[in-house]
Image 1 (cartoon, rainbow, N blue to C red):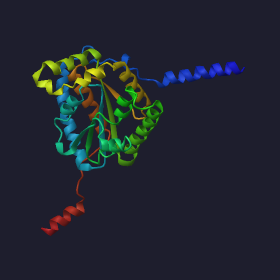
Image 2: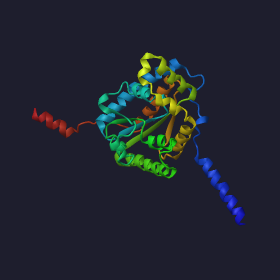
Image 3: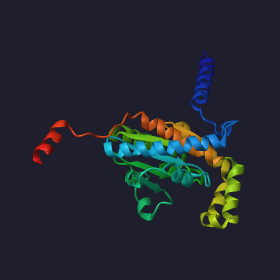
Image 4: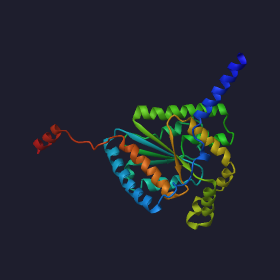
Length: 276
């Protein structure tokens, strides 16, 4: 009887694990849908850029919400390009971008979220994270610089941090995993060597990190599947579709806020007229 219960418990645990592990990156395409017209999508994307600019203007004026956009992905997956293109029609006044690189000595002497929380968006602003707090359970985990127990505790802290932003500051948290194929990443890294206009992007370390591709994919799957706030998996092999995908999500999420430009009340207007 005990053996049967133990076996049943094992089966239930296994089924629960399989159900929970919803995202397997190797089973998700890195390309645009079959038959997608580049010309058509580019035209639609340009309109979305304009719409983002309009919605961002209202967000800035209303100052009731903030937006945190996370672009996370392996080297050459297009984080810089997405930032540059998607917000090309938005006012720089309401957009802030932070790129999280290797922590400084001061940052290393604090908890891993210290430098991140300082860059959380205030109401009215869109804050873009080019890489993010997830670096501390990706790079450090892949290289074995932290234990698995610390990974789990940091993941729990990340979930609490993001939910705090949502609850306490009306922050819309949009997380985009830049899903690139290994072949396209190789092509992009080679272009940085061969194209003079892209030489400045070359980093010898990117080639070393590429050798750990499978380890990174496993770490990303863990972060994605353990997140309470879901991720958007962006196919980025074709940059034109990447831009459309991200812009379309942002427009849809901003429209859900039902924002409007603040108006003066009638008493204020009447008072101003009387003073004249």
